[in-house]
Amino acid sequence: MALFVQKYGGTSVGSIERIQSVAQRIAQSVADGNQVVAVVSAMSGETNRLTAIGTEVSRQPIAREMDVLLASGEQVTTALLSMALGDHGIQARSYLGNQVKISTDSSHRRARIEHIDASNLLGEIERGIVPVVAGFQGVNSAGDITTLGRGGSDTTAVALAVALKADECQIFTDVHGVYTADPRLVENARLLETITFEEMLELASLGSKVLSQRSVEFAGKYATPIRVLSSFSSAFPGTLITTEEANMEKPIVSGIAYSRDEAKLTLLGVPDIPGVAAKILAPVGAENIEVDMIVQNVGADDTTDFTFTVKRDDYEHALLVLEKIRGQLGAREVQGDSKIVKVSVVGVGMRSHAGVASIMFSALAEESINIQMISTSEIKISIVIAEKYLELAVRAVHDAFDLSKEAVVEEKI
Ligand code: ADP
Ligand code: ASP
Ligand code: MG
Image (cartoon, rainbow, N blue to C red; front, side):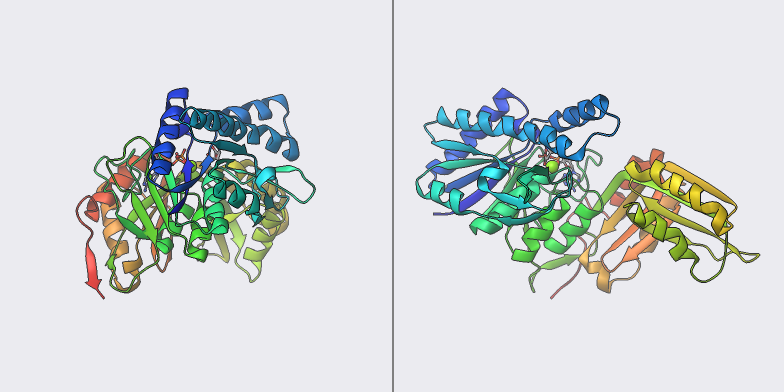
């Protein structure tokens, strides 16, 4: 008998019919002899709606209360799915984060799971009950509700799978699995049978929202297999995320990720002296603004230009910080652009294969797309471009690496 944690995302529980269809799928899984713990997201659009009304009612919503508000979306779907399962003769019970219990730190709206006490759920499973757990939420040491950040239901599911020692964590979503690029942007993107934790972690951290970054971190750390599959069709086995095996084929490029959640700031004419980068980035960090890419040009006349990117939500805040320090740094001007995006190619085969960057850059050049910033690591290359070129760039790079065809394999080892 296998134990599966099955997570159903927003679109998968987006209507009464969808919830009934999910109940049917879980009932089938139970009839096949499996034990199932379900994890649900809020109905699609609900978390956005709640965020909007929270920020409308108050200009600076209190984080603790925002979490109470946001967590309500998942509370609704746990109850609805449990009731729908009842109609299939399945005994199901809803569980909120504090009932499980899923203990987190106190960083409201981006809390981290610290511990899961799985004994309640294990008891339920033993009694033949299907627990339906609210994703995205937990409880801090003061007993307050916390939420795990957008896409956090994936994290709940994987953390539960680890705590319950489940055989597989199945992430049901609105596409058939993980593709070589977002299938909504690239029509001929190819569905992957498998991908390594390492590559999936890069893709998730670089913007592919099919899985949350923390969910992949958890699964990789504890080697818990994740399978991403569609809740709309049973025709495909989905994508298995696994550890790299010695005999696994290593594609040079496995996938392309993009992120619109980017903005760029530049300090022009900064004196080119030691310590200046720290003087710029320390006050930015002190405001809890996360900096991603950094470029410092070699300047003429003893000055330089210093550019970095931040999340788009932090753009205005970062501009204010730079305006404040501009005078004391002796910089000439602050410039910013919040209409930029990041496009990245990822592949473990890049480690031992040169030339990936030049293929990517040539493809962009052919489309006359100007690259504003570049950053590389062992298994990825990221570039920043103007937002208006996003679709064109992702498709051009996807074509340049022939990703719609079977993977280009460097070697079999
Ligand atoms: P859910 O509500 O089920 O959590 P999400 O919207 O968070 O679903 O994630 C699924 C979406 O991720 C897909 O609809 C797709 O547009 C997007 N996506 C981005 N990159 C990829 C990729 N490489 N493979 C599959 N889907 C991707
Ligand atoms: N409902 C939350 C969100 O939309 C969590 C999730 O769906 O994973 O971000
Ligand atoms: Mg999601």
